Image (cartoon, rainbow, N blue to C red; front, side, top):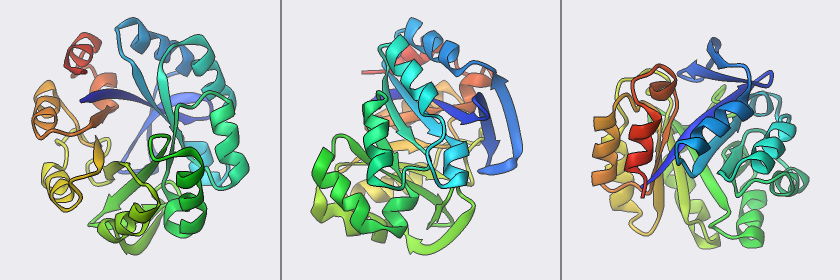
Length: 239
């Protein structure tokens, strides 16, 4: 299982939100590049970098931070937030992203997302499926849709979809444990896809449970920032 620490960016700083609410923000570290170096120094190989400014604004904003992290560390960065156009996708890769994480565009402009799958490949383009009560939320979780996560996934399968990052918004930033039942259901329905868990991880035991399922990866944010899991413990779990 890939262990993937998260850095969420607002105003160029590392933050965490509770249930995707921009009004419930905690700032953890002023310098995301230094935080990325800490992860690298502990032996972590992957990073989930989210441009929350971009997600809210509908355009990529924090490319400079993506470029610095990619240039100054060896981390494999998946980058998301505000990727709406062909130029956005191209710039993300040009600025060092190993993968792009796409949510709103995949839901609202499926043809655009599908063209990226075909252009860059399913190993480079990840579907970011953010779920509230089983339905997909977009625009930095600010807008609720009437589309189920299952139907969203189904729509992209013919175009080479390989990997899905699934966030249960009700769990995100709450340290109440991941949505194991949701991930089990999705794995049973889509056994050929690689699923990455996001939201709710609160302990080493949560990660061990996800690894046993097995999930392809797990994103960790608040549990690390709040001191519930050490970098050494994270590094020990990665494959």
